[in-house]
Length: 449
Image 1 (cartoon, rainbow, N blue to C red):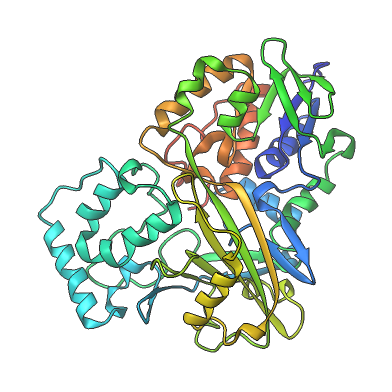
Image 2: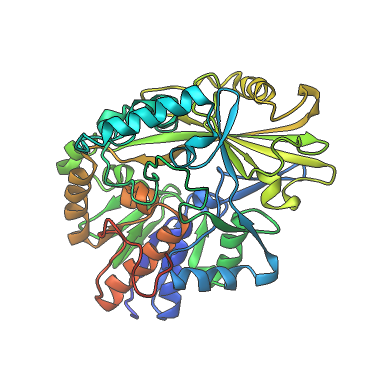
């Protein structure tokens, strides 16, 4: 607990902050390093010309009592805005409630019949779980696959669906239904959002409650000497540690630590990059979409896969008399995005979808690209991760978080925060971690389902 060498945390996002808070509770010796000049990681927020922007359409919900307690400590109860999810999918000229496969009755007759016929055909098939692509075909049928499941997932993942596993879909993909089941499916059907400052408010407030002398912003880890248990920062400072909790992408961690013996396991790890395009718009939200929180766009003619009415989350996300629309565009090594005219193409697509009325109404544009957006659950992922963790953990290096653990299914903010706490308890108290090793971390006693 009072080791002269600190436990070093790399990254001040949800995982790193979860770890730091737990170490502080235990009165342990710790130090947190963050390469950026701000905290929050992928959950940070930015303000430009009085518009607040997140790195994508984050919504706040929880599976864990400890995370709920943290949220209400970080942001007072009166500063939360609570929402019932209203999400829609644009198919042709028709808005279909989310989840698509539970609301087939909203489709025009020809498309509805195609989907129902596909479902009848798959009743006589064994579900093929050899890949996500095969699962879609044998679980949803040709109609649902063609109209939504294939085009949307190919767009968001920018990766061949036949090269993806199905182990991640439990809370992420609704089951198919021949009868409409409404829109309440999933853990995010009710969510909350900070009234001021975006998602980043949570993490900025949390860090203010930690001892500032233990947090170094603008400090990137350049090299790790795993045998000596030392790291060297980009500024040339050498820091000795007794254990390392790293939230940097595990492929980058392995290279930074010089683990040449496990290099062959890195190629099965694939990821998407995400472009976030924010549009500040004068006037009021068009009546046709004003009730929606966000919208999905499976068709290839739209560069973005999702559009969020971000000013609906909180009216303080846009200046008075304006509203804001946040668009997400996926990119990968297999599908590059033409950046030079991306904003123009997004605006034209928004006009086509009648999300905005006129180009002249767009008075502010914001573009942010994150290299590591989402870890892709590829077929070779788990085997690669097992090998990497087996090499790292005997050297007291624990890779956790969205890209540290590299598991999309436990990559939400609540999962990541709890991963940080559990990693500390393992290091300091010797208790067993659950979330990072359990493929189904929900529905436990003491957790919220």
